[in-house]
Amino acid sequence: MQNRPENPPEIDDTADSHPDGDLPDIVDLVMEMGCSPPAPRAPTRLESLVETATAYAKAASSDNTRDAYAKDWRHFASWCRREGFDPLPPSSQVIGLYIGACAAGDPKRGVASLSVATIERRLSGLAWNFTQRGQPMDRADRHISTVLAGIRRKHAKPPRQKEAVLGDDIKAMISTLGHDLRGLRDRAILLLGFAGGLRRSEIVGLDVVREDNSDGAGWIEIFADKGVLVTLRGKTGWREVEVGRGSSDQSCPVVALETWIKYGRIARGPLFRRIFKDDKTVDVERLSDKHVARLVKQTALAAGVRADLPEGERELLFSGHSLRAGLASSADIEERYVQKQLGHASAEMTRKYQRRRDRFRTNLTKASGL
Image 1 (spheres, rainbow, N blue to C red):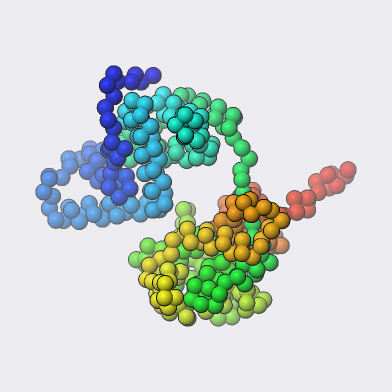
Image 2 (image 1 turned 90 degrees about the vertical axis):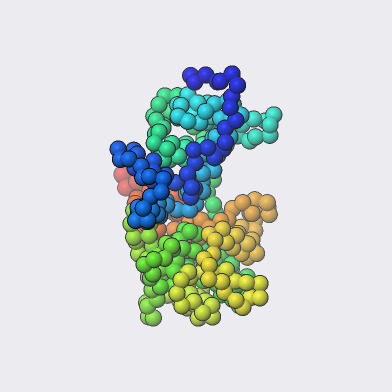
């Protein structure tokens, strides 16, 4: 066990951190490869190479992921400072104590215990941060794995899933929107997100046309008689999602998209953007994915979805994920088509999204002769 120093030094929460959200320092990478670091005043050519490599390193993960990992490191470093430990080098014993403290919480200080999922996420963030510093963490070490196994056994709870909004729910939700620019934009967001089974980050990451230098997650192509083809960049490569035209213009995602693009005057760049207070000027910047979560929650509550529940419970049920789960639960077609639309690697993952599927459609009891 790592001993506490008699006079623990003050540890900066951001100590040993790198610019751009704890990204690896290029000089450190050069040294790890056995090369000599550049002189303090590097030639312009080398500075350009460093900038290029840094940009690629930054592109290796999303902004949300880097922000989350940076927060994980600050949380761990702050805990180490209070308890008198050094965050570096990684100590399995210290990390085991840390996750135990996260699970137990501290009622005296008003610190709530963290869920198992949050603790596992923090471990992933720490592993990433230690690796970037050239000092990998051994997550399989018994001081970590055994404590984590005990936390899972004692504190694990069944996952709390967000409510799926079904086809009729979506129709009721879009009817609560106005016919101004905001209403046109938000109607297109809800219908495309639902019909495409898209994540909220995928929705706001779309561009109206393909642009090779875009920071987005993909683009759309509208086919007059068929629908819209959504091309998305995922963790394992590019995938395509086909969104067909609906049976009614009022609930057709393609019509909603065409209307928003026309009146929003979107010719290139981000598809979904902020609208200024005058309700006439469309910004050039991309919407935040938090807007999708708020939009789903607000319209679901306004439309009376799950009105059988108390108001407090209803507010916790809906999020951007409700659109994705809604398509999986609404589409009464072969499961493999739903799996492809959602981009799942396994049918088992797709079934987790099907909140109201008929679980007994295939009756193995009768099929076995009983």
